[in-house]
Image (tube, rainbow, N blue to C red; front, side):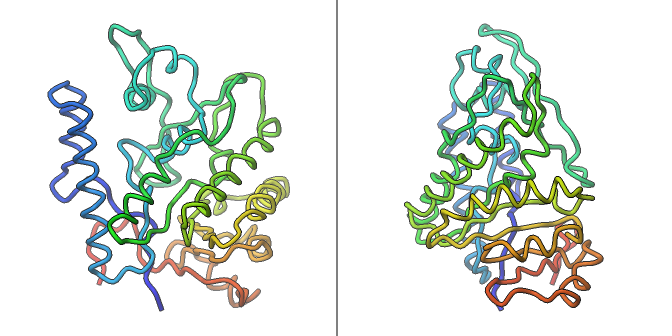
Length: 300
């Protein structure tokens, strides 16, 4: 048995990220110092996991604000009103997360919604009709290589294509159907890029799979991943689910060429029954979720 962490808390044991971010917003520190704090936290968290025997250590789970927003930026989903401010990439990111009022303009932040049934709120990505969905960011790859330079092989974590599509807000006339092909190409590019830099595993988070799914939803999931997984080459792809079970699509998930499947055995009341009823594919690794990530108490 090996140990895997879905994602590691990013704020720091002494809330270093919170204080550094607030100082940056108040203009008492520069971007360089904020990024140095982030670098120290990532290094500390990776080494902590390594020292405690975690074999599947996540990267790209760190964020200055929100990982859903991070994925949107990675795929160039940035509304024009934020681009027009002419700010640095980091300040454009914060403008989407917090809003901006200053000499460059006045814009409100993107909407926020509760992350499934948790108390966390995520930034809702907004897609305009003229947005070109493509892989344009480098954060996920930079942080993987950052860990690799420390001698630590990580499992990069990306919000999956299906969940991101379902959480998108379409602000123009386009619909989900209009952007499926663009999503497929962008995610294929993500897999290809990780293959080129030597990643062994990628984790695609798909918590939306635990919701009540229609036949159309399941068909969309299959349409996305049957193509995305066609370019994985030597990269192993983990489909990670949480916040419930995937009773509506368990057999569909098992039929696709994922190398690992993460199932919630805490809140997923049907997860064990699904395995017992339908079996689990011999060519896949089961990532069994046995720790409640929402529990505030230490788990031994």
